[in-house]
Amino acid sequence: MGVIQFRVERPDLLSGGSELSLIDFLMYDGRVVPARTHLAKGILFCERQLSESGQMRMLWPRFDGRRQVVHTTSLREQSAPYSLELELARGQLSRLRNQFYSWSGAGLYASPELTSMIRDAHRSFRSAVLHSETPETAVAAAILSIDTSSRATDLLCQHYVDQRLGFRRSRAARLPVFLGCRLDQIPEDPTAFCSAFNAVQIDTSWNKLEHDDGEYQWDQLDDLISWALDAKLFILGGPLLDLSEDYLPDWLKAWKGDMVNLQSFTADFVETVVGRYVGRVRHWEVVSGGNRGGVAGLDEEQRMNLIARAIEAARQVDEHTQISLRVIQPWGEYLSQSRNRLSPIQFVDTLRRCGVRFAEINLDVRIGDYPAPTLWRDCLSISQLIDQWSLLQVPLNIMLTVPAAPPGREAGFEETQVQWLEETVQMCLAKERVSGVYYTNWNRQDVNSPHTALVNPDNSPSVTLDLLQSMSREYWG
Image (tube, rainbow, N blue to C red; front, side, top):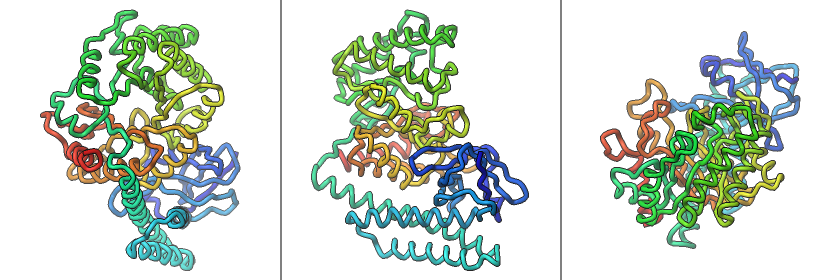
């Protein structure tokens, strides 16, 4: 057991216990180590199972009102507490500089505005270090450095995306990337859908298809797939099995804890659905959320066995089908609130080492509770996430939904949603390993994610749909 302490001069900037419980440490080898935290008398205590050095990650407010994850540099344990604000400023500035020099070395052109902002962040950080004898001055300078580094990071990502997309489009008139959306029925306005997307993810929730044991309801799914084929949309089916949410049929819950029968029922369902659409649906997202779990109390080993059996069942029906797995909370927030031990990329890599074969990986970067919290991160974090998973040398699909408005900030939040969506989609398009970007909420009015659907309750298009239609014309028109 190890403990790292932080002296907090501005505890009012820290969020409540629910967000403090999501503090974790990123280790040098990519592992994510959760921390048990508590704040007492101005000291933040972070208890960990390991005593190794690591980067602390936590939510922090920006001057524009958003809360996003910030990083320290790699910290070792010591008896004296660190200054939280100073270490966050050091971490954000170091992160900015490292990425700036990495991209600049690869040919990125930096504008005078960006270099000026980096200098300002340096100046504020130096002021924070040199005025340690006056905590109020030092903390104010550290907080200013954090925000300036964050704004400079946003501008750096904008330069990267503009120049990278310009290079990609100079090589090909149309980007080799699918832009799609999830559907569970034919949209009321098919023209609006097809003007924004060239692909569709077909929802195949088990509890809807097989509400009663052995009794399948195919009509709605048949009609949706036929419509998608007529519209010449690329079809991604699934997920066939969602291990993160309770989408299992009620009749199957009686077999909870019986792995033999659970695997048998799962294989039968996968074989039935994939077999029905052989030749029409060639790409299936077989499992979602296996890295986190949450259904039927399955541990990591049991989930791996279930995933292997489901994929084997799909391949037995059609050996040429393309299979993908969805990774939820890809930054590993679930490790702070569950008994899981493997980070997302460790879980997938372990499956590969055990001989489980799949063609693509789908990264779920939805910000919010779906069903567990994924914390708001900047565009550089998304870039680094894609780069990390690209090391596995398989194509990636990015599944996303705009962040829901925080309580009390619903008015005017659409502009923030549009900005986030545009920046995120463009960053995905700038990465060669990304083969598809899929929006996950066409017209669902989900109580856990209000105001994130592309279609309003009156069936009028939202501003986010207008943006996607505009981007479709620009990049694929």
